[in-house]
Amino acid sequence: MRKLLCGVTIAITALVGGILPASAQDNFYAGKNLNIIVGLSAGGNSDLLIRNIARYLERHIPGNPTIVVQNLPGSGGLRATNQVYELSEPDGLTLYFGPFDPLAQALKLEEFRGRYEEFGFVGGVADVRISQIRRDAVPGGMQKPADIVKATNPILVGDLNATSAAGILARMALDVMGVPNVFVSGYSGGSDVYAAILRNEVHMQNVSLSTWRTRSVDFVQSGQGMGLWYFVPVAADGSYRTNPNLTDVPAFPDVYKEVHGKMPEGPMWEALNWYTNQIGELTFVTLAPPKTPEDRLKILQDAFAAAMNDPEFVAEGTRANGVPHAYIDAATGQAIFNSLADVNPAVLETMVKVIEEAN
Image (tube, rainbow, N blue to C red; front, side, top):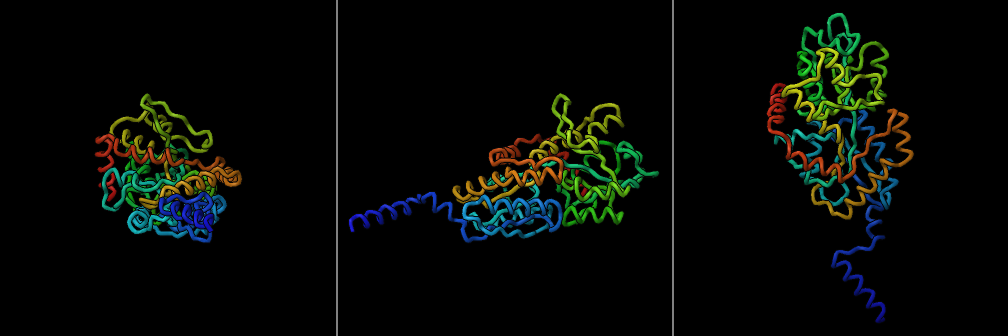
C-alpha cells in the first residue's frame, strides 16, 4: 500500500508540475484529427502538394492522427492565415498551409491581422517562380522571351490579389523590362488564373516549378504558351546563379541583358530583387496558432521535417519536378520572419506604389 501511495504521489506531482512522460506526449495525437487549413483553392498544384505532404505527416507524427485538409481560399491565403491566427485553438490540432506574404506584414495591410513571428513555425517549402505567357500576347507572336518588349498593348497579368507574390513578381519584372502591363485580380487560385489564360482573359501568370513541370506542359506543347523567365536572387556585386534544372527557361537577368545590353538597375529593380530574395527562400509556410504548446509544436516540426525528407516523398517530387521539393526548417523560417523588420524603407516605398497601381 505504501508503494502504491508513493507511486500515486509521484504521478500527481509530475502532472501538477506539467511534466509528462515521453510516452504521454507521443500518444497525444493518437485517435485525434489534425486539421490543415489551406489558403488556396482545391485542385491546384500547391493544394496537391500539402495533401501529399499530409500523407507522410500521418506516418511520422507519433500516434498517427487522421489529417483533415480544408480549403479556405481568399486574399491570396490571408483569409486562412487570419482564421488560424485569430480563431483556432492553440492546441496543436490546427495548422495553416499556404503562401507566405511578407508584404502584408511589412506594409501593415489591413487584409492581414496577424504577425508572422507570433505563429509557431512548423516548416516551409521554397520554390522557383516561373513566368509563363501566351505567345500571342505581342503582335506577330512571341518566338523567344526577349520578344516581350514588342508588346504594343498592356500585358494582362492575372493573380489572386494585389499583394500575392506571383502577381507582384510578374508586374515588377515587366516594369523593370519597360513593358506596359495591367493587373487583373480576384482569382481564387493558380488554376483559376490558368483557366483565364486559356480563355485569353489574361496573358501572363507566375507558376511554381512543380506546376511548370506538370500543368504547363500542355500549354507549351500546344504552341499556345511559353516560358518567359524565372526569378533568381542577384547579389550586391551583380552576380547570380542560374538554375541547372531550368534549361528550358532563361533567368530574368539574362533576358534583360539580351534586350538592354546591361544588368537592370534603379528603384524598381532594387525592390524586385529584394522581394525575389524574400520569397525565393520561403514560398509556402505551415504554421501553428500563436501560443501552441512547445512540446506539441516540436512534435509537428520534427514530423514535418521527417515527411519532407522521407525517401518516398523525395522520390515522388523528383519524378514530378526533376528536383525534390526544397524544405525550409523551423529555425530558418523563423529567421526569415524576424528579418521582415529590416527592410529598406525605400524598397517599401516602391512596393507600396506597385500595390497602389494594382488596386
